[in-house]
Length: 242
Image 1 (cartoon, helix red, strand yellow):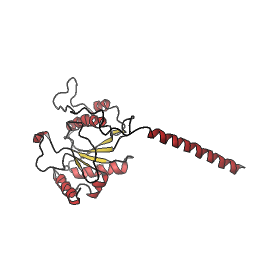
Image 2 (tube, rainbow, N blue to C red; image 1 turned 30 degrees about the vertical axis):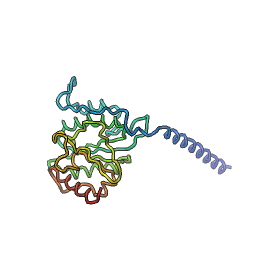
Image 3 (cartoon, rainbow, N blue to C red; image 1 turned 120 degrees about the horizontal axis):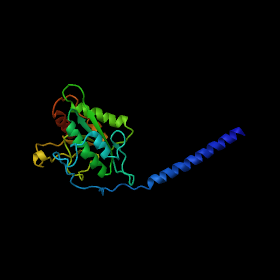
Image 4 (cartoon, rainbow, N blue to C red; image 1 turned 90 degrees about the horizontal axis):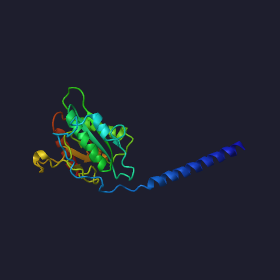
C-alpha cells in the first residue's frame, strides 16, 4: 500500500509538472520575434563630445549612466524587450585602459543604441591593469573566453569594439549576418571624411560569431602596442576565406 501511494504521488507530481511545463511553454510562445527593423530606431544618435546641455557632468559619470539605463541588469546585461523575442544575443567587448572619458562617452551612447535595436546584449569592459605595454589582442581573447565559458548566456555574435569608436546612427545594426562573413562596422569614419581608407577592414568595430572566432584561433597574443593584432586578424580571416 505504501508503495502504491508513493507511486501515485509520483505520478501526480509528474502530471502537475507536465501541465506547468506546457503552460510555461505556451506562454513563452505567445511572444513573436522582434521586428527585423526596430520601431525604436531614431537614426542619428546625435553624438556630441563638446556640450552636455544642462548636464552638470559631460560625459556623464558611470553612476549617471547606470541611472539613465534602468533596463540594465547587473553586469551590463539587457535581456531584451518584454513585448517580443530578440532576434539575436550580442556581446560587446571594450578593451580598455586609462581612457575614462572615452569609456563614459561610449557607454552613454552604446547602451541606448543596443536598447533601441531591441537586441539581447551584454557589454564587457576588459581592463588591463599594471604598467606593461597595452596588449589588446590578449585582452580581447581573455574577454571572449569569459563571455563564452563563464556567462550563462548563449551568444550569437561578439563585437570587439574600440572604446573611442562610437556609432553615429542606430540603424547600423550590431548583428552577425551569416556564417560566411564577419562584420566590420567602422569602415567609414569621421577622421577619414567618411570614406573608405587605407585598406582597413578589421579594426575599430569587428563582429564575429563564436564559431568564426574559434576558426581563426582568436587574436594573436604577441603584439603589444598599437595596431598589429588587427593586421594579423585581417590575415587570419582572409586565409580561411570568411
